[in-house]
Length: 128
Image (cartoon, rainbow, N blue to C red; front, side, top):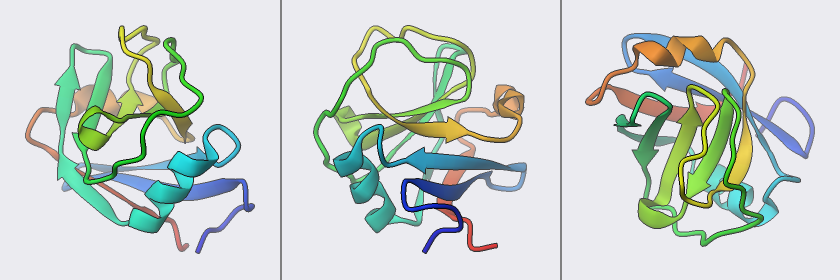
């Protein structure tokens, strides 16, 4: 299913009609949550913004909370159990909610600054 190792799963985050970013989910960060997300791929949803620091989309995933953090760096990917949200950090941030860390954007995360509410995120396996 993945190019990469068992512990790192390479994915594509696409903003439909705009851009594609490489990202990786890291199983060692939160094994149960990452496993659930991988089994649910592909995922798609409307982009929502939390200020200018987080772009996210809601999913049907119900995984609970695991190995939480409250501070994230630009490029981090986290899971917020409320709404099953997958969050992409545009800037370093302390969102005020504990989230489950799940991975990192491995290409230029600055591109996410141009994402608007109403755009569509698509997250799927990188089979290339």
